[in-house]
Length: 369
Image (tube, rainbow, N blue to C red; front, side):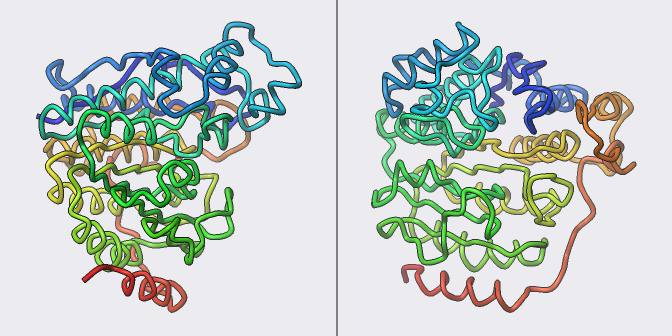
């Protein structure tokens, strides 16, 4: 039975009124799933908060101590800001700056232990912070829970791990952690010429990294080609014991921090195709800065993972959850009406552009026979 690992720490927790992560995300998925009857007590686990010592599995003790102290003190020194990138515009000081990411890390490390003990599938929407580095915060990510999950899996006896990342931004922190590791396959699709400006097509990370920068306007047709010609052949050839899918929702059309054009049906298609390829499966969140599209996408993925049927129209209780959301300030437009009444987007097909076709061919040729 698939499990959902969540926490109330995300409800009301915000990076600040001017930050893209002022919007609710994980709490929306929990509320929508419960409104749909998709989160019975037997499938929900409260995420533990990882203790500082557990985080030093990858992060440096000095950094973990600085992060914990910043939450307690509510401020950082200039030295800490310069050394660890805490207290910046991207990585601000806020009330749960240690406890929130430590909860995400605790959730994925729990999932790693559970999956090592027995086959299954687990969704941790609070996970997916793929930019964090060993000694500093990076790109809204104070910790790197995918790396911690992979290391916890290794410690528990799982060796071959396929990590697939369809976030709009390159998983620079995960590549930093596992580049050159022959028992880890890292696949990343991400918008070209967008922060962190890494993950070039010819960047193999020592041989185990498949990086596909995609042009603006990536559509469902193009994502399907990537899935069937790059992602699935690579994963099949690798024969993983466990698959991790980082499903950052910022590649959706409505997201304010990318210029990609996927529907959430493309995400569902990736999940459905990957799930049968390993006995153990970990589904993570990641980016995503439109509260309506993130909540709908990750809830649809949970329904897909857990085998619940998604109907064309949401019941009143679920519509009420979406109607109560807001941008939390700023001048962004209200959501389109269908974002309040449905869970799945209309398909967003389009042409398979020649520039992307050429990149797919390059990566397809790298796939082991």
